Length: 273
Image 1 (cartoon, rainbow, N blue to C red):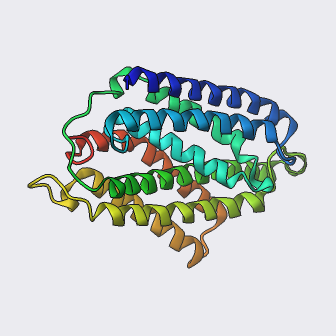
Image 2 (cartoon, one colour; image 1 turned 120 degrees about the vertical axis):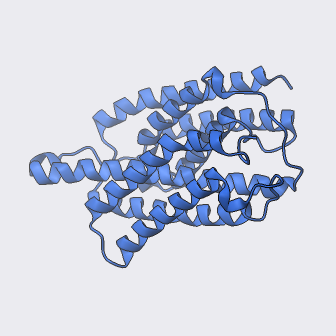
């Protein structure tokens, strides 16, 4: 299967995410206290095209499509979209779609940069389902972390309104601050559980000769991300970390994740052979 075919399909998905982002502007003007089905179905349509693009690439490679930065970024955006669609099944949380759409569009545009889609190198001969499970769990975890960061930004904005302008907070278009606080914590916990399971699967995958699991840059980076979220969650529930500090921690860790994800892939002989 021609690689250009799946790139075109993914481009269509990114364009639909762009339409969803544009439509979100109208939602920001109207508020997020009502269910919004149109934006949800826009995201669902983009996700369907996105999924088909990944299936096309997977069949062309006969393995899970996570072999270069384009595929890893495409999978990362797919995990974020899936997490958003699942969470938004709850009407009270459907507002997250309007804030996730710009992030999906931005990541999608970045993924389409030509230098990221390099030809695949040699791959490990290993059990396909375990590789796919490992990649899926880890990237779905990143999707949950992304949604948690989106909710955290909304929480911080709403808290700012409460602190400096009570009337503005009452009339704010954003959802109630208590709901945002709960959503941020629950999504971070879901992401942490998925990341733990993904790292466990990764530890049981075969590796190139002479490459120890814990010596790989990507593995150490993933362990650092795991420890950062573990520390933040423990501080949240055991030592009652304030909602504001917790939200800033969530935003900070996810920003670090986004800024270093691609670099660590390039430095890893396991993930970028």
